[in-house]
Structures are given as C-alpha cells and as structure tokens.
Image (cartoon, rainbow, N blue to C red; front, side, top):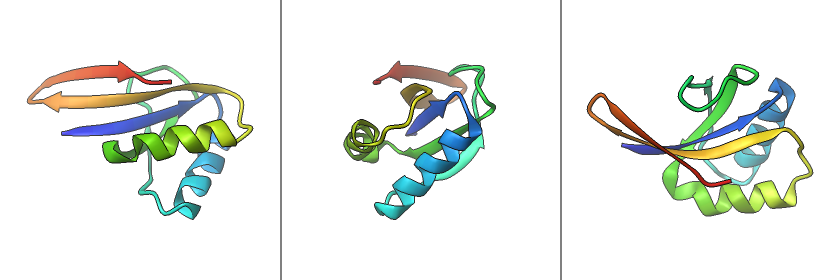
Length: 86
C-alpha cells in the first residue's frame, strides 16, 4: 500500500489545502500526523499516491507557508518506508 501525506505547521494550512485539493477533484482525508513523518500541528492530509503530481502543482500555485513536506508512505506488513518529495 502506498499513499501520500502532506504535512503543514498549522491546522489552518491543513484545512485550507485540503479544501483546495477537494475543489480540484482530489481525494483527501484529514488524519493525525504519523510520528514517523513529523511532529507538527498534529493533523495532516492523506491522499492517493497517484495524485502526487497534482498535489505538487497545487502546492506551487498556492501561497501557503508552513509546509513541512510531502511524503510517500509505503507499507509492507509492519514495515514502513518513507520518501520525502517536497
């Protein structure tokens, strides 16, 4: 299983970017930020991995500050691999 986590420093940015993603037809779920990714505001956005290019494009167009990162999480059983994209 492979998915994206988009993490910001503030809840406000998480909610704003999630709304922007939904407006652009992308799947979004608000989740607790995994400790393996970051200790940030506590909330992050989870999306499908195949949305990566669209997410990166939206991030470049938005003027949101406080981005911690865009991560791909790959789970294989109990093992988790993390790759940072942005």
